[in-house]
Image 1 (cartoon, rainbow, N blue to C red):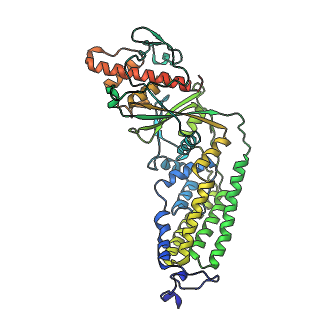
Image 2 (image 1 turned 120 degrees about the vertical axis):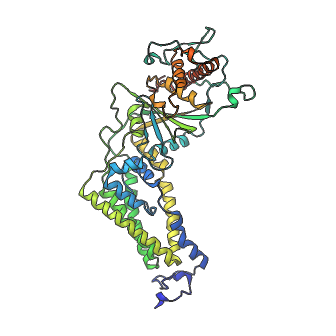
Image 3 (image 1 turned 180 degrees about the horizontal axis):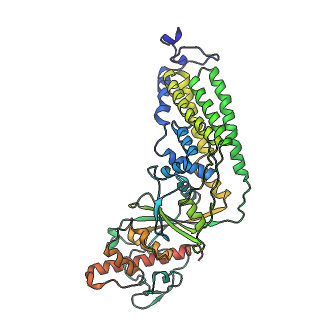
Length: 477
């Protein structure tokens, strides 16, 4: 039998069976190389659940790509089978998943919605182009003084404070668009020892016209997700006639999975979605970063319903129905079918392996054009009528940045910064000075007091600049 004989032509593959539709000759090196490419570069990683969560959160539906990564279908089955458990684990995975610090409430938690927030960050930065960096003051002479000591932290607000220099001269608040003086690294010793921190501020607000009716773009996207499995099934039949059995099996598998996921699995928005559950706190102020020792930070301010939903609350859930359980069971089976089909194509080689590589390239193009993270972010912002404005600030040190955020927010809660600046008597003295109170002079040397005072002054000056550029945390000037 030909199956047990050595193939003389690379185009026939390991089975050595001529297909119904004859294919042209194929170089041996191309046949061998194409057979292993999908198994090397198209496998699901530890970040896959993280990405799946974000895509479903933004799109509002479960979708299957033309050629999903090996292991992705298994992840989708777990998502459909137990959404809450899946989200709990996906929030802490992904390698570059964000940690969030709530400035008002003092909590620290992993970002809830996977790659959704990162997608919105990347989209907004691309849409606004190259945002000019506002360098915060790091030169000590002629800084504003720390504001007069308040009776309580809550009475200290940027909008009501007048700025008094150390000599008693009144200095007006900075005008809109003011830029801090550029430091001179040759003259200012504090600049030479700086550890620069970039703070990207995203002010979220609602646009008029939000409607529960489906937008044309979302309807078109839904139609695309339905047509894609149909086209995949047609192409799979043609591949069978050409002898590419492994690639055809992959396409049949994803076609059925795509139909089932798009049409039979309902994705719901939870109660309170994009709504503020804190009546007395209309604005949100949450800081996000990859970890506590990061140099790139993202501050989300503005409408609390938007900020809290993006960073803290789950944006979707999947009802546990009999149909959903059936789809989840099929996706688990489809994972093993895809595994068998991909390994078969690798063993068969020939045109089967080449077609699988071609399918990989087509899938990459389709995902980039129709289902990329930035496209999903744009669709979500448009559909939900959410606007985002961004600013970028550069600080010479982390403590200055944290102090500026504390003052800008107007919050009297300081526990949120415990993971960023370790609780210590020096930090407590710095916080007292930050809020206009005097630290205990008997506990500190003159050098320590000078450092505490200069750090607090830098934070106050930076907070004034943030207030001038952004308005208050609610976005109001």
